[in-house]
Length: 143
Ligand code: HEC
Picture 1 (tube, rainbow, N blue to C red):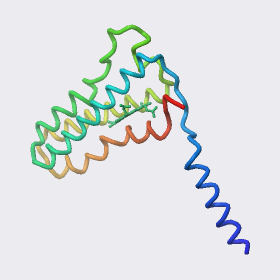
Picture 2 (picture 1 turned 45 degrees about the vertical axis):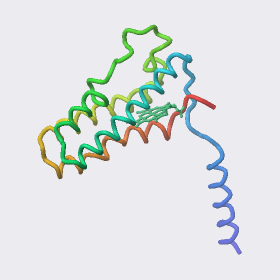
Picture 3 (picture 1 turned 90 degrees about the vertical axis):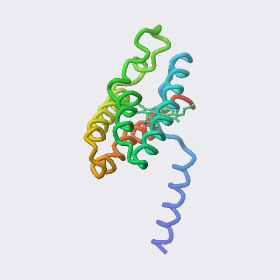
């Protein structure tokens, strides 16, 4: 009987978790959010290209896209824009740090891919998506 009750409670709490969004809400001016979303779609596109290139054995090209689109080279794209259009300064410190970690991880991946070692490059692929998941599971910009 007791286990049955615990089971029901566990089910109920997981159902509640599914409906309640507990991620931190990070409000941003509209211009910054529009830029953030456009950058995100470009990241997803780059990720897809990188996966295709690695699968085709084109490691050098995969590394180039990783560095240019996702790596440290891709940081500060909106530096020249007005404050309200820059996503970075509107992020909490911890959120921004996840973003920086993602850029660094992509640059590390780019260096591995540039070495031409297929096995190491494939082993490093998950490092490209860790920051995406870490940030998306912790932060959101809309209710
Ligand atoms: C520092 C935090 C952060 C990181 C890192 C991050 N994202 Fe996002 N992303 C966001 C936020 C915030 C949104 C807005 C959606 C929301 O509020 O839930 C978003 C939205 C998106 C969207 C939807 C874009 C649209 O048109 O609305 C895509 C696609 C996306 N991200 C892909 C990625 C991919 C792929 C990566 C990794 C390469 C990544 N993101 C890394 C924070 C992040």
